Image (cartoon, rainbow, N blue to C red):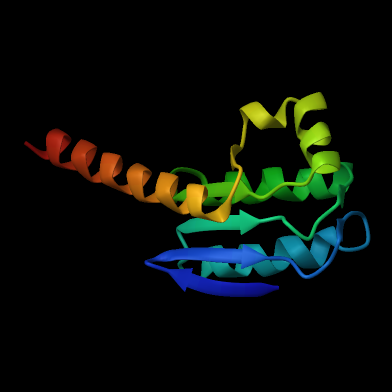
Length: 124
């Protein structure tokens, strides 16, 4: 999996075209390891992925639950077949999905700012 840091946001881009029964365990393990090692703001760029089955969708849901309230998890650059899956399963209402990596990074920055404002407001 390709990864890089963009101002405190971990951008992950799987090399494989499918997140399915054969790849989902290793995919989930790789991302979960990063979360367990302190990654709290993750953008998952799916521009190379053209197929996700129910096992892959389950892995994504598990990762969203793993990061939970501790951070942010956004998805970007989903291809049309994957977009259809997210819409049919209504997971487009569960995940924060952005058209581009740049848009996701902007949204992540805005989310961090809002979180900081809320923290300051609750402290005082």
